Image (tube, each protein chain N blue to C red):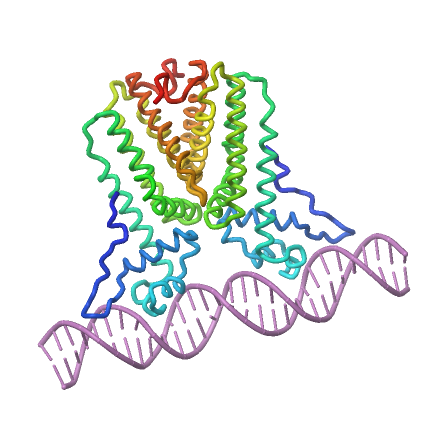
Length: 215
Length: 215
DNA sequence: TTATGCCAATACACTAGTGTATGGTGACTG
DNA sequence: CAGTCACCATACACTAGTGTATTGGCATAA
């Protein structure tokens, strides 16, 4: 995935290394991973970066400013992920694989990213900005999956439904399986089951997701 | 569902009403719903109950004690929910309905309960007790669903897989749809789609969830 | 009525956290 | 080489939060 994630370049000037806004956001990511949004405190942040709080208030107006920037960056990067998994040739297995890679990540390396996403979702239940970001990302991903599904189907009637179902299933897998005792085998199994939904749908030539005699 | 949830009875003694442990836990539930576990503070709690913090430290040893009790109570009640939706006659639609009612709630009235559960899940990512509680509840629910599925199938081979799939799908639905702008129509649609998975599986007489020519 | 026990109020000490104002320092610029 | 700017340190004021120790009030039981 777009793994200039830890945006790496700590701008140097002369000999001393100085911090950039992104450095602070990267550090904030750590705290979010460990304890959610309520865990990102400027004091802890400063300690980890080996500087004082004075530095923080130069880069950011206040605590809220940090969170806003964090959410904005998160939103942009998740949107960029979409482009990354977009281009396809229409083969069933590659398309399915592409969809699942977008939603579930590269399986293994993406645990941190998923913890961040779950934290954002949690924060979205009490913060408007976060809620907007999540809503935008959700919609974009679902729409993209839908168009990818349409590429492999003769009858794309149920593409919208299947896209939605895939989305909640994968997100649910992340939610349930992203614990301290993550069962990797079970994750694999779920991935198989979900992928199979696409294959089955394709094998019956697409069509409605509520059966041939749907409502 | 078991809606002695707000365990109602505020024990009275003489004329003045006094608080019980459960009263504090109920108030804590409110704070959890509003802002997650990091939002439950004894000061806020006391303010809401119209008493001072001195009262709190009579009922609870400390802040941690409150959280532990909260988690324990949550665990017990979710386990009790299982019994509530257990008894069945084996009809496809009633069993399906029963499963979905357990996992999704009575649809509408259960938004608060779901917010609590998501908060617990979030807390479980940094707290061992919470993680244990969630794991126990998850496993119990999945197992129960499996046995219910076995009641309606001629060939119950894929019951375990389907149970798992149902679980992550419903949980994902809660996760994605439990926002500030909850789209009730979409929730209904997802519920239909998930229910249909069971029906389809039943109509083909049960069997593997990976197709007839599985792996 | 007196005593006892349950529950709550009050006062205190302590820590953590935010935000602000001001000063310091090194690097590049003319 | 003086000045300026970017970045950080320090010190201060303030609020919020936990936990403890002590006291107070009200009911029921003896």
